[in-house]
Every structure is written in C-alpha cells, then in structure tokens.
Length: 369
Image (cartoon, rainbow, N blue to C red; front, side, top):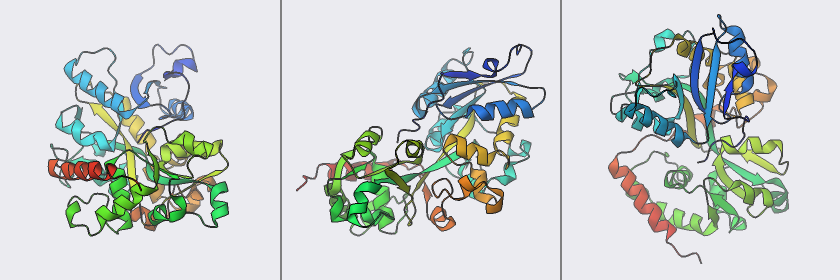
C-alpha cells in the first residue's frame, strides 16, 4: 500500500537549516520516506548527542525508491550520494539480504535493544537467504510500525445503525458497491483468511475450505481496488468504507471529522519500517547513536505521535508511562489480544506466490452480478 501521505516540506532536511556554523560537526546521512522522521526528533537528537551532530535527511516518496537506491549503490559503491542509513519496509528486507544490498548490524552496540518486544527482534533476525532464523544475523533495526485498518464514514454508518468491528462486516449486504480494497493479493486474500480464522501467511490456499467462495462474494461488494487512490472516494462519500494503511489514514483524521478507523478484532496485517545499512557504506558511529536514540522509551511516545506510526517500544511500556494521546489511540496502540492475532506479511517462496497470483487473477475476472 502507499505509505505515507503527510509531507514535511522540503526534500532534504538538515540541521544547517536550524543552526549556522555546522561545518565541523559530525555528519549522519539518512535516506527516509517523506514524513518518516519528524523535525522535532532531528532537533532533539542534535541536542542530546554530544558533540552535536548534523543530520542530513533526504526524503523519498516511496519505499521502492529507497530500495532502488540500495541497488544503485551496490552497482556504484563510490557514489557521492550514498547514505549511512536507509529506511526500508520489512516487506523489502528479504530481497535486500538476498541481493546483498545491506550488511548486518550488531544489536550488542545498542543499549536499548532489549526494549524491543521479542516479535520485532525475531522479525529482523534472518539467514543469508532472508528467511526468518532464530540463529541468523540481525539485518535491521525496527523503527516504527503500523497496520492495515478499516476506515469508514461515520455519517453513512449512523443511518445504518451499526459500525464495523471486524473483517466479516465487509460482507454485509448494506455495503454492496460501497467498499474500496487494496489492489493487493496478499492483503485481500489475507483479510479473507483472517475472516476464516487463518493467518495472513497461509500458503496452501487450496486447503482452506470456502476461501474461493468467500473471495467471490467479497468481490461483489467492491466499488474499486486501489492501493494509492482510495482516500479521495472515501472523503467524497463515493465509498463508505475503505481498507488501507494506518500510515495513510491516521493523518486523514486531522482534517476529516466524518471518518473513523478501527483495527479488526480478529487481527490484521502489520508493517514495520526499518533502519538498514548499505552494504558498501563506511562505518559511522552516529549510526549506532541514532538507532539507540530511536529505541529510547522516552523518545518512543513522541515518535509515535509525531510520525503517525507507532514505535515498537511503546508496545512493551506500562500504560501509565505513556501519554494519554498514545494510550487511548487504539490504532497507535491496539489491544494486546488484537496485536497478538495480527501478522507480519512474511516472504513466500515461488510456489506460494504463484498460488496467490493465480487465485487473485481468477477472482478479479469474476463477473459482478
């Protein structure tokens, strides 16, 4: 899905914009998604770390552009625009490892690594093929995460007399031709699997009873499939319900008072943005300081509120240690049972990918009655 829509402004944000005379300061070059690093965190890092560093944060519009940069730097290791640290989505981590675009990191160098909940530590420990491996190396540092959520028009649902709480509600007859879904086999088949009590990462689709029938029925409900153009129809009321990324939808709540979000109670898909080091980059001590800074419990709540995506650290914190704006936001901090029932989208082999692609094509060809 498209992530993220709220912009910080200029493509490059550096502390030289905030203070003069930075030539002698240590420099950390970061490539990030737009809206990936709130300016307030840049300033706080500069104040907290001594000698005061200069962060050069260059922003890209999409994760695939950041992945392409890693590929470019492998081809041209001496590239002058190479960063010390790059933001990458967990979906891209397997490919980055297989293509040898990044190098492992040493979690022993981070004082706050133990603050990470175990499932995020497991997510970034992989073998050289990019597969999850408890004995593997650590290839990335989790930074922030979000989920696939349901957005709905409160004005439209008020007339219906109910509000959506789970995936099964997408099949209700009142929503016929009022729904938008991601243009993604993993997401749509995945949410249907969750309705049937299965994991998003189920690969043997032919062994799931009624899956094809459920997908065909859901297809009848859909007005449009889109991963990057679904917000406007929802805002205009052309659709009453949309399934999308919390990274897209949380910022929308600031201006759209008739839209509400809910995480399905049976669980959902999770995504995580990670910090990775380019394979050809030179070691810079500020990399370790920045990662450890992001893992601090005193930084995590601020990061979650400003970035409209959750720091993994807040999941393990006591509720009384969190500000009310985080503690009471069920999208930033879902109920523990819902979170436990949710899945990271793990990499599939060729056979699993082929099954999803085949079923997706078959369902999309079904003629709507």
